[in-house]
Every structure is written in C-alpha cells, then in structure tokens.
Length: 127
Image (cartoon, one colour):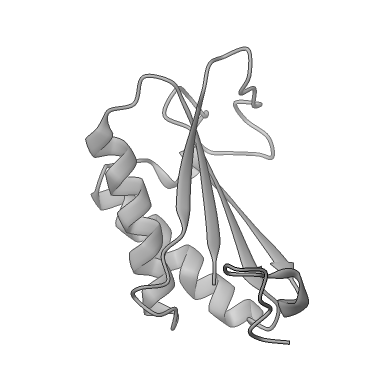
C-alpha cells in the first residue's frame, strides 16, 4: 500500500493537483499496485514553509513555483528496476498532464516493513 504525499506551493488549481495525484496513481498501477489501493494527500505550503534550492544538484532547468515534491512510502521489496519504472512512467505522465517539466519534480521513495502498517482497526494484516 503506497502512501503518497505531494507538496506544492499554495495557489495551485484543483485541476493541477488532481492531475498530479492521478499521474502518480497511474504510474503505481503500471508497476503492479492494485487500482483500489489509493491513499494520497496534497500539502499546500507557502514560500515560508516550502523552501527548495532552484538548482541542486546540477539541474538543467531551474526549479520554480511549479516545483512538486512527491514522497512515496512503500512496503519493502520493490526492486530498483520497479522504482525506475515508476519514476519514468510518472515523469512522462506529468510532463503531459499537467505539463510539469520533469526537472521541476523531485521524487523520494521511502520503504518500511509490513509490521509498520495497520490499515484500520489496529490490525496488522501482513504480519
């Protein structure tokens, strides 16, 4: 069950945020995540609360107000090959809709053991 957190600057349209959420979900589905396994949130932050370097590390295009930080929390076990596929599919999709430059997207994969997930009711269904 991936848990997705997307951080953007305040003022983005609902269409922009929905396109990001949908693009992430499509990329995850293409890697084998079930379609109904969708747990996502968007954090909108002002300039005082969301600071980033416009060029680090050696970007070809400077980050700007459309910068998107995507954090994907996953259970352990996905290979580097799968993560690269997710990343490739995700960036290709977001460059089409909503039209975000891939240099303006940072993705962080975080892995955790199944024993750290309770999907509801305090039950650990995978341990």
